[in-house]
Image (cartoon, rainbow, N blue to C red; front, side, top):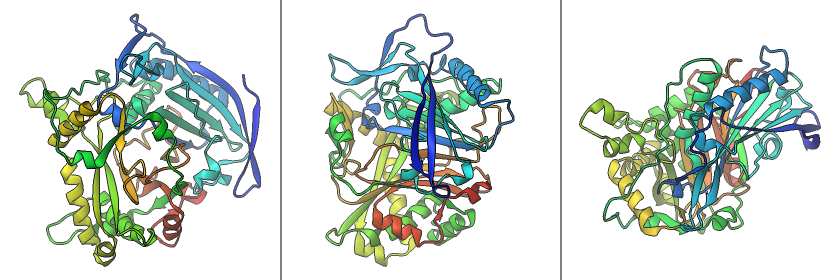
Length: 465
């Protein structure tokens, strides 16, 4: 048991206090009789950066007798879902022979932290996440690749923070896990039977486009965790109306060139971004995270049956991500229309959004092993840049553990500084087509967004608190 009190500033209530009351280790209810065993990371796992990533949900007061009842129900269903997602209850250690990290499936367990805050949800600052979350609503313990913090507020509302080591998987993997957990909590059948093979082998012999050498670089975990001094550290949360998103899509789509919502949004943000970059730079980059599952399906299909091929990676747990980058001169971007910039965005994503790129990327990693690798831009080695991630398929309203849907769902990172700006989009819990946008920004870009009416600082009023 814990009895730790910490005080922090709250926006409408002076200081607020967080009491960490209990830590529990939840293990799989029926672990494999073969424990322990190791699962090597795939080549694309080695590109993950080992960053911690957190998915955060806020709920109104559940219709239960007590907070303890809520937590005990979560623990029970977590123990059941870990039977199927056993690597999430393991440990990530360095293999002494290869020098690379691997997952030891030993049912070490997932950490669950219980906390209590002495303010209601409506008094929480949902915009300035630097002030609200770190070591308060989100806690990171390095000994556990997966951990959950459940926090109770004086109004009876609750927040749940799910934190994962990125080596365990990507957003698609974590979405599958959270969805499966909710299904078990509601006594529903699990729709996903997870694939933990992490089988993304290189070709023999490996080969790749030389341009990958300009995008990615070999690095150490120490270099990732100790990035150069950076001013990209402001963590913000925004609400964007559906009408604004639709308007941007109309602006970016000219003639037969229909742009997606994320392409149109990226074009708009890129145009804002160029006005916030130091004048010593002539060019800047924007990047997009691309999930390769749909592109890699044919490579892992076992026969010519289309149904089997189409399902061959749908339940794959691990990292299947790449980064697409577009680069342009700052002056050209200032003079270009939203539709013209949208064309640059579309072309950059198309170069990566195909099977050939992912096969090349797997081979590139193979040629640079052992060790970890990362995009140069993410390490801050490639000039000013911003990475946009679309979470349109990530569950929000569906994250119901049997006690109701959330008021808000978003993504957060506990890293203190970044080599590149980030924006991560999620569907709003309102279900009306609006977005929740989390971001890591530099001061000038944060100031520019504050002056833009499309980017509404997230507040309790957006959650109808």
